[in-house]
Structures are given as structure tokens and as C-alpha cells.
Length: 286
Image (cartoon, helix red, strand yellow):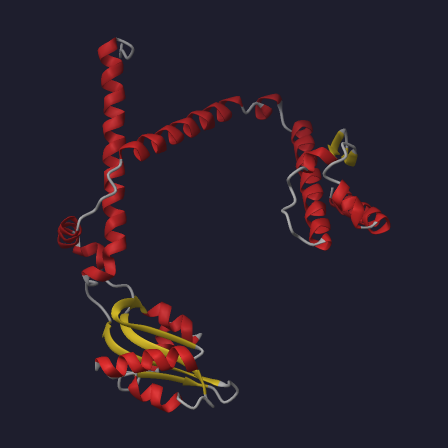
């Protein structure tokens, strides 16, 4: 089988190289056989729309070869299964019917939910859910409020910017924001928003445990002798454990609430269908 799979793309590649790029373009238009495995044939028209627009000739060739190879493998697997499996093993009608029913149910449930789901979640509802489900929001990792800057070591404003990172004066913050956007490689001000420590560690290119071990008096500095830049973060606030603050959990809370509403809709749907069928005499238990 592997030998056959290898021969197909090799032969086609030879044809493509000999005929040039025009064959790749005509491959998806002319209704002729372009590959054969056993009794199965692949026609050019079957590749119609397979290739995305705007790709290079080399990419077109590679994608075409991948498709043909995948097609051939699928046919060989099916032929082998038909030859080796018993009649009972080849009968997949029960599985297909079960899958069909599952798929139809899923599609109807999605339409039912989309037509009826109330997606408005108020602050009061979020607060109530948060207060009643504190166990869902226990921190797995530290969360931070911070300012971060990545700047070239040779930048003229480097020292001034780093010095102003820890200031909470409105004037300094505005000045830093303006200077950083002009001179820094990257600047993030998340001093009023809680962020997962992993997100900041990603900026440093290290794991969050290593990053926090570098913290000295609320500053984290990563400077490599080989690198042209220096990365600095000022940790304005950190929470290492306990229950996460409400503002950090709002998206999760909204998802929990909407998920609960979806479950309630589906339960109501199931009960309604059974009740209606029972009332009409369509559903009877003997």
C-alpha cells in the first residue's frame, strides 16, 4: 500500500514538471482522469474549488498531490475493509442511522436555543452568581496588574520610561504612554485590569514561575547580553491565591449563566415534546 501511495504523487509530479504550470491550472477544469487506484478513478472536475485563490504554483502542486494521495489512501482502505471484513462487520446502517438522528437532534437544538436564548446578563445577575459559586473562581495561578515595556537598550528615553513605570500620577502616566508608543518596541498598560500571570510571562518568553522569581521590589527585569532590547514590568498589584476578584471572572460568569440557560431550555424542550406527544396519544408506554 505504501508503495502505491508513493508512486502516485511521484508520477504526477513528473507530469507536472514536464508540462509546466499550465497543467496545474487546467487540472481542476478538464474532466479527465488524473489518478487511478484499483478500480477507482479520480477526475479533474472533482478537484474543482479545492485550491484556494491566490496561492503560488508550487503550493498548488503540493496541495493537489496531497489531495490525490489522501484520495488514494481512502479508496485503498475501503477496498481492504470490504475484502477483509465479514458481511456483518461491513453493515454500518445502524451506526449511520444513530449518527443521523444525533446530528438532526443537535441541529434542531441549536436552532431552538438560538431562537429563544436570552443573552442579556446583567451586573446583578453576575454578582449573584459570583457570590453563590465562589468555589468556581479559586485562583489556579497568580493574577497581576502591571505595566510592561520592551525597549532597545540604546533608546534615548529608556531610563526615563523605566523610571516612570511605577508612578501613579496622571501626568506621568500620560507622558509615559506617549513616549512609550513612540520609542518602545512594545508597551502594555494593564495597571487597572487583572491579567493572568501566564499572559505577562509570554511577553518575557519564560514561564510564569521563573518570571515571578525575578521580581524585585515590584519590578521584573529581563536583560540578556546577547539581546538588543530590555524587557521590564512594574507589578502594581498581585494576587497569588484565594478567590479571583469579580472583574477578573466576568466572561466566565457570563458563560456559566448562558450555559445554564441553554440547559434549562433543552430540559424544557424535552419535557414539552414528551408531554405533547402523550396528550395527542402519540406516546404510549405499555
